[in-house]
Image 1 (cartoon, rainbow, N blue to C red):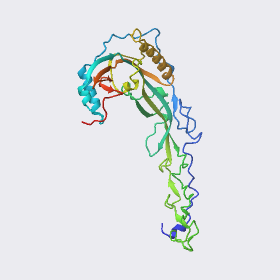
Image 2: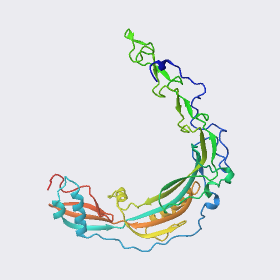
Image 3: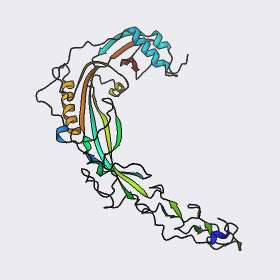
Image 4: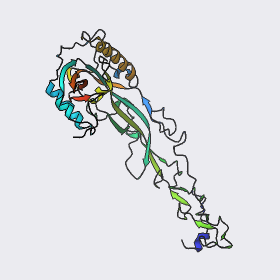
Length: 368
């Protein structure tokens, strides 16, 4: 466009203003089994599983647990764990760890109960894409299957995953609602004129009593948004005029985890156990697991019963329970008492990784 053309008004009344981002009510066809999607609502609608998809627990069933030995930590292991800990603290000297005198190593029995409930939930929403000539799987090919009969590829058990699939036979073609099937929409920056008011002279054509050099005295400039055309390609249909609408199913697999450790050692913060592993001596996996009974730690039994009830109540109404797994780990915890330079100190060694927790160390100022 040359300077002379910049004075030409390019307004084309046939180019529509940009329509709503979502199709208005009544614009889209109804898909059997998915009638809850009114208009072009793109919000996911939760699809509760049918009653026959919900597993039914059996009454009076329980799980028994074998006896287990409490692990112990030797002085050599305890010393090496402290040296590893001190080595990561640049203000700590390794001398006390090398020369301390052990007084007592006191092991504790710490159990960690874990319940995992692997669930599948499904939701559906309208989706769309520009129709560029691709084949459309619509109602003439058959009736769309209900949400829970749509075939999907399952991930490994107890793994979080999300899969989005197009519901078979739910697709159809409609003119783009954003541009009314025109392929382009009126530029909102210049209101379809192709020209905008010069920002330097505010449309007067003059600046400081002389002709504006920016707009050459016209007071208007070519619109930078549409390059003076007055219209822009519709971003919804990419200029193809038509859209393929379809029902998109979102399938979400989630491993719901509950963990519990009885607080038996007040001096040791329970949160530290989150960073370490233990020895799993009991693992029970089934479609539904049942409360643990007869285990020496009654808090573990009570926790198992409550957690299983809560998971069944919480997840079965909105999702499908595919599998459950419960386990008990023995998490190593040893309270180490020692002396150094005539004073008493202590620290904890915990987890299979032999991590160390201490609130006080003999020196924190020497660097060796």
